[in-house]
Image (tube, rainbow, N blue to C red; front, side, top):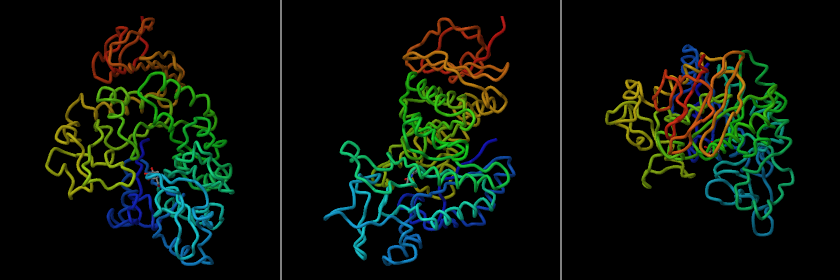
Length: 466
Ligand code: NOJ
């Protein structure tokens, strides 16, 4: 069953475009009202889909009433809901860096003279999850939305909620890198177990997918716990992997080795709102088509970032139109619905339109059987009807510099995926007899596999009886 993940829509000063939440239980007027949210939840369910929403547990906006109270005095009710420390000498309490501009992760509050911790912008003070009242309040937020019918949450940088109790300096090698990229504290797992039992106490399949920005597959895998922590964890190693057969074979093998089949189910993603679109990173449309075939045939849950199904490249946003403190505007531009001047949007979009909007829009691609949009649609349909693709095992059969071949298998349903990562034709010499079901470039479908793949071609194939 398909699901929609919405990025934050809560009231926010938008310093980090909604990831600075001023009220977890409301809707920013820019997006609508709470009634609209209820109507959206119902409308998604009516269509037989699920809806998951972004939950930002690690930090609030500095305009959230909790922080406004916290900074009002050292003895305020919410003071300890955030992480406050005295400075060390003339400077901040330690050498941690924040994300974005590499500034210190501490800002001095002139009123009390103490520093507060912020893993991201100073306008995003970190919550202190050691405080049981914070945990209870954030559980309340989950309940608020679960009671309204959402099916789950995408938990923002959730590995960063537990902090080193001693707030020790990072060593000199790590000191220049944002602290949250190393944060991996044992007590975070306790918090996640509490959250999981809350989710499991609800009817239906409520779930949480975690953004755990750790690049070791083993460290990431620990966030599934023993089936009692996160339901899904994004695989960040693969998100950052280059377009190379060896790198992807390694991601698949590591994921299979580290994720216990009993407790953990992989989650794959090629692009998101935080990094340049993969079509641009991988080098072009042919690679993006092959990547789509791979994404939708891997073992695990695939996440599609809006616009990748249209093959959108990273947009070149002019300086005067840039708004994001992290420089991520190029992947966030608005997707074109049609070829009209406003691309089907009723109001002036907040960012420029995606490039080639006249060509790469939903209406045009829906009509073209060979479009990227229809490639995604076909693959999603085939996946929904194949037990091998939905639930079957995965085995990497072969990888060299250019070619990756894996098999998906569920009892007697078995499919082979072959991906040519190179700009040259590649031979698969000892290939068994196969029939091409889907080709990323739509060539050769329905025919016997001829033993070679065209440049950047990916094929989904079934065994051919002699
Ligand atoms: C991760 C989100 O994906 C990103 O967009 C945001 O800036 C940071 N967390 C801070 O919330």
